[in-house]
Image (cartoon, rainbow, N blue to C red; front, side, top):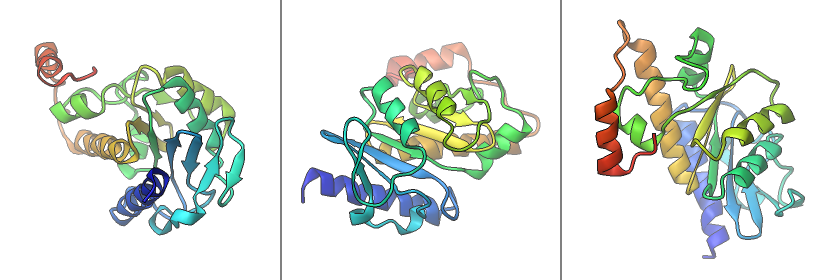
Length: 212
């Protein structure tokens, strides 16, 4: 199996896992992976639970569609993230329920949508900024994410959901799931939990290299 074939299979496996566990519904969400000669991205209006490895869209380094089905309308979003974050090899975007609910209820701060309340949130996710609402596929939203992509692992679109990037599609999915679980914990807690202390975060940096 070639590396590209392996990545195609990984995208489909991650998509099915997210869909089957309710992180996305219908034809919402999209996934991409960087290749040496461009990247793969899920087709427009594709259900993440029923992806076909052979039908995934392939685009070249300039963003030109070269094979597979028509690419997602978020193509420019993914392209901007890859340009701004050279370490990113995989991107996952969903409309996860608790994170969308968080934007409706009100995030903690615009530059950090959730306080650091669990160690794995600090270690695996880090700070996540809010991107103000714009229609799906709006190039301005893509530009706003690209402007912060070199400093964080993800962003949260108001009323739409999270986009997370990491060193692989699987790692991006893991970080997104941790972020969604943190939002669920935050929303269900009454009273709200206190953030981890600065000393606790420093310890996570020292012990695990946490980027926070």
